[in-house]
Length: 269
Image 1 (cartoon, rainbow, N blue to C red):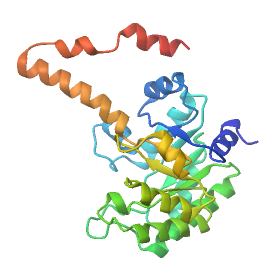
Image 2 (image 1 turned 135 degrees about the vertical axis):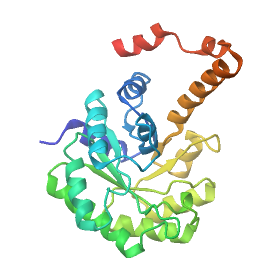
Image 3 (image 1 turned 180 degrees about the horizontal axis):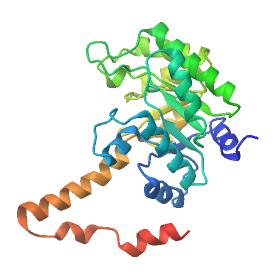
């Protein structure tokens, strides 16, 4: 039987525009739920930093355990940032996606980046086959996990809008449920992507103040995520406080910290 969170996640993508913020652990996930967000998405970078490693340096086992932890900690749908599926070949991507579908997440994303600076994107035909393999694995699982296909050109040094749109349209044709090109910032570029893959929903990554929910909703964007930005914001406060302690021997940054009672009230709900 389909989990209610799977159905709710599909419903959220059917109309309107919603923000899906990115927690990095169970505590940040539960805090975001208390603030009223209807769904959450994991962040590969935010989670990697909690493990003391760089982004894209966690293992498949760690990712699956993290998905299970976050999904179990909140009552809302969770999308799992599954990086590149922890494999190159489509068949192995499918095996890993099938495992991820059992963790309780309501959605998964698959990227087309290779991690190789000389060839940062998979060849287009291979990238499409990887999405098809993810789709087949989800369908075979019997769980209606929502599949997001990502094209990473704008964040790996290949900011070619036409090529990005071509890939996203092909991913849509391969039955990805949602399309996502992180790094887009220009309103015209975002609008072009939305038009090219319509009526499939589009996710836009916002890591700064270049836009607003209202503006993206007007363009027709369905989903807005923030990636590792909330984790970076938390690290910013931490770094500033410890730098003051270490360099000046003073503690004024701690005066700006949230009170323990305020944080703990959130976990009582």
